[in-house]
Image (cartoon, rainbow, N blue to C red; front, side, top):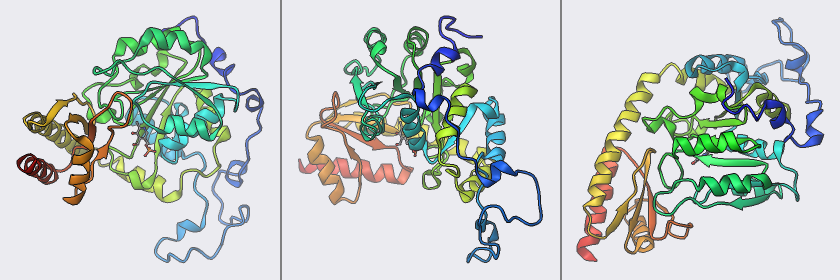
Length: 361
Ligand SMILES: Cc1ncc(COP(=O)(O)O)c(C=O)c1O
């Protein structure tokens, strides 16, 4: 069911840069022959193997369409494989979405600061303008009416929920209002959704032809080093991203390891549970420190904390060998540090260091 009968996927595809609509994508050797054979002389690979003797498969190009991985992920997430795009990190999906919808030196994206920095950087790389509708101060929720009003001038809207660096979920009714009242694609970046009790937007993908959900294997799944991000959207949007991606954007090792990781859901669930418990305990302990002014509620694996002398504390923590993120120069985040929830022992050491600061300060 389309929750926004006034907007159809055909309208959204009209937002695609005109020269890409008829683009003939690169056709790789594996596009032209995808069955089984015993002699492969079609891709100019090294037939002798790779110097990594124990793993000879790496002399061959990986599956450009990542079929096995998409099928597994589709089952897990309750979507069709055709609704999945896999990127070299979600950062690749962010880049490709801007490439797909925004004409350089002409179009603009809309972002809601403070938020993840790559939306703006990717736009700048492509010489695409950025409209900013800041979140509401202190509650960090969307200024929905203003976003809808300004959406006429935007080709893509970026929402991040739970938001980085503030940690909060964006209100469901606000995102629904935006999805149903704008006429451009809306990206909901759910890099941190696994740490929340909220189901996120994936179960509702079918209802909104303009919705693109981003998720990643870099956070709860613990695979930041493999670089694997996911965009879920209408098959026509996914087809577009597939057309403009580099042919072999997900390497063979990443595809293989991600498949193995998908068998370890219990382990991941335990880490998530642990992180939520630690988040609660750390938030409480931080609240009790006299120099801490505000601990913002978090649905992510980090906590935004406002404190007196945040930048000085940031530098002091470095001398203790503890690195957090100084966000105090970010809009609406003055005097704020963003602290990742660590292992219990790491959190204990952080709190000890902060108590020491208090004693000496
Ligand atoms: C909100 C958000 N989106 C996307 C990313 C990038 O994720 P990936 O590692 O998949 O490129 C990050 C990384 O910190 C993030 O905070």
